[in-house]
Length: 182
Image (cartoon, rainbow, N blue to C red; front, side, top):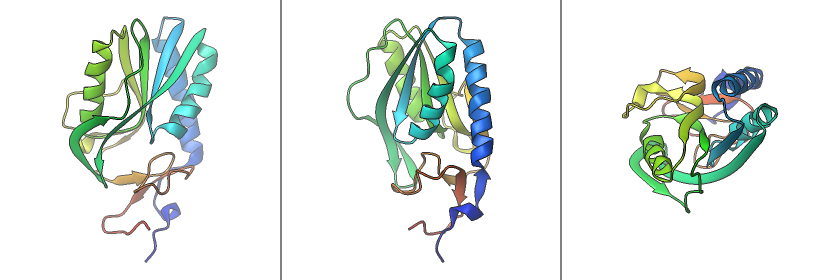
C-alpha cells in the first residue's frame, strides 16, 4: 500500500499560516531590541523559517538571517550525536532567534544553545514549528512553538522529510507506524 500523506494530515496549510502569523506577533512583542538575528537550522526549517522571517521583518529595524546545518538523525531516529556541518556564524552581541522545524529530544538545540552562548550571543531563544514533548531528553523547551505534539509520531511536510521526500507538502502529516513512505 502506498503512503498518501493527505490521509494523515495533522495541521493544514491554513492552520499553519495562521499559527505562523500569531507566532510572529508573539515574538515581536517579546523583543525590546531593534535588531534580531534569525538563525535557521537547515534543512527542515526552510519553509517555516521563510514564512516566519517574512512576517517578522516589519517588526524590527534590523533583521539578520543566516543558516546553519546540524544533524543528529539516522533515518527516523535521533542518534543523540549532534554534528555541525560548517562553522557557527558570528553572533556576538546579538539577540538570536533560532528557528527550527521540530524540537524532539532537545539534544540538538541544547548543544547549539551552549555553542551560541560561547560565541557571545546576548540572548538565545527558540521558535519551533512543532514541540514534540513525548521524546524529550533535555530540560530545554522552546520559548515559541506553533504546535505541540504529545504523541510519538513521525511527521512530514512543510519542510520536514522522510529520507529527503515530502518536504514540499504545504501541510504537516504523520506517517503511521509500519507505513512505507516511498
